[in-house]
Figure 1 (cartoon, rainbow, N blue to C red):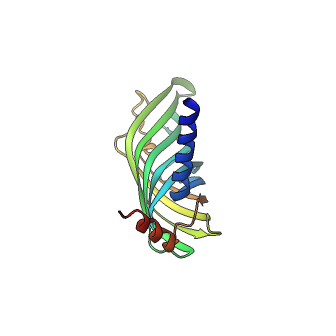
Figure 2: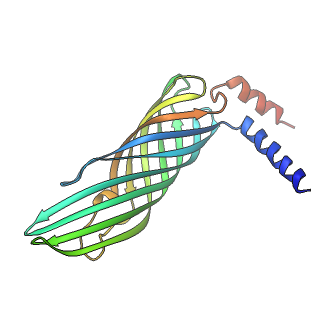
Figure 3: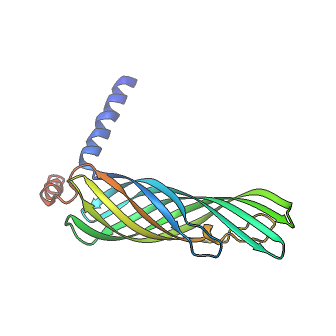
Length: 211
């Protein structure tokens, strides 16, 4: 019985995959510095999305970035290191079905940040702690894709990540603004099963589902 159920689930899953326009992507990202003392940081992510229509897709994506910030003044030296991990649902709308297709989108979900604060006063360490914070956030984005083949697409995009709430470095009153608002640029590759722009296939599926 278990073998039969497993076979049915496998066949059902393969059937869904064959019809669904699933797309997997991987990308490298760069955090664009915007505050004094901030340094650009590299990161990246992976994601999966499903094309509801040839130009509209929804999915989920996880990203990760690491950044270091140093602040100095009046004998106080603060070194902050943050690992920021947004995990968000995503919506994408493509303006055209040509090989070169610009798009806009929105990601929304959680932004989890671990901040390590290391403070020294006159070369004497006075504070060293790690604080973990999770907030809700969203990220509007614009980008462009280019179909290298029927299923393989090169992508480039820019996201403005917004976390709702400030991340404090423990009891130090240092605010790590990067973990709340930051701009990122990404380049990567996505692979789509099937041709999402095949109108004849989509029309045939819609007709076949009519009673």
